[in-house]
Length: 574
Image (cartoon, rainbow, N blue to C red; front, side):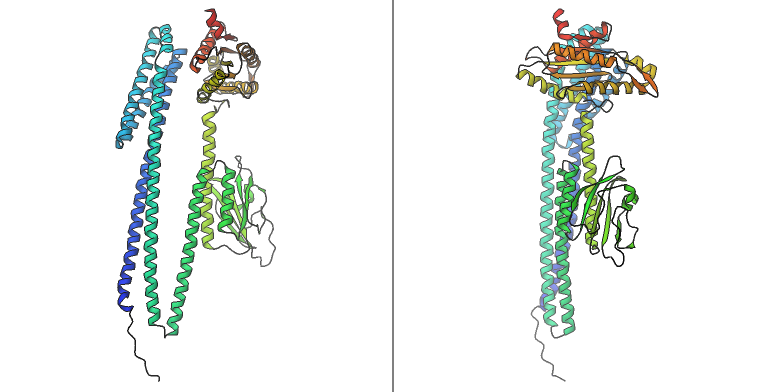
């Protein structure tokens, strides 16, 4: 037996317990910092949501005030009881929106002051509108005169300007809150990384001490080495996960900036190719009809080729709304859009991931490779699919809202909001170039009687047909809008009164020869009355042109309908 050698004192033994306690304290501090960071993030999210509520209430207040103004003007022009009732019912909504805005900004004195000022301006505008409505009930002629000289346009302009100031301040506050949240997130990340790093250093020192103490034992040496290998593998895996998380976060941010689906698909293909270069595949997008999915982007080299176009029933993932993975001839049923298996021990695998949101299929990620994917790769692909699905929904919703904000859904023509935004621009452009601009106000004759006789569905069909006629007759540079109800407005840039009169007669004749087929019944032809106004000098405003055209329209109706009246000529004659 070999004599035992004296054991040397270990200089590291005295530091083991303090190092262990310090590392545990660091990990506990990291946990506390993480909890604190999550709570701060939740608080920041609530304040960001509060800013969005304030912005939404600002828009609601302005929109409600415009609704009251529109209803009152319609009543003054037509004396319809339904419009008067609509006007009365819309007033509480405007006051309620203004009140909610004041309540929402109670935490922000400057914004609250502006909100109260906005509420006063809303009440002032409603008071002026109410005065004109009351005056109209007593003396319509005087009401029309007061409406032309009323300070309502100035009141609305001031109200809109004040609302814009509030929007800008709230958006600045929102940006500051986002910046503060990002700063806190960066600070938390730094604290967590520093704490984990120090804890890992201390743990490494402890391992080194144990290794030196037990270096004479081969078995313990192998275990220690294996622990170090595992630690390095864990660190490498953690580093890989961190890089993937960073890439996913960057990808999510870029998705929010995409302008169309193709950009999102190309970005997704590039991300998958970078993070998992061993696989290939393609991204599909389902058409709006939900009957066909087409390839939108490709990445890597496909080991199992998929069709360029596929029917949703050809893919089990789209059928079931769940991930579908196949390797060779084993496992799940093979999708019909994939090439046939080679047979035998085919190591190739395929993965179909449906792009789903709100129980609706949006598209498909189809991937394939030589070796089965790791669990981390599957989780990464699922995360990408979830973020891409949400981005597709947002892009589709954004496009839908953009179209809805500009177009009237029944006729397909531009709506009144688009008219108000673009008539001013076109008029100023023509005035700068010393060119004329004409406006046509068109109203379908006896539309209410047509509605009462044949039903609202037939009335909608007639409006849609008139919209199609106007769309076919106007030029690309013209602006055809549905002004409201059965009234339409056409803006003719660079068109003088004589040309506009010919165009109006063409439109009147086209509508007068139009019939519609509804529920196997033919209705029509319908007639229309048109009022014409042409800009005379550089001082005219869009409101003046619309008023002249509107007055000419009512004169055409008074003279027997189915005719065109030039409002400028009527004013000159008067």
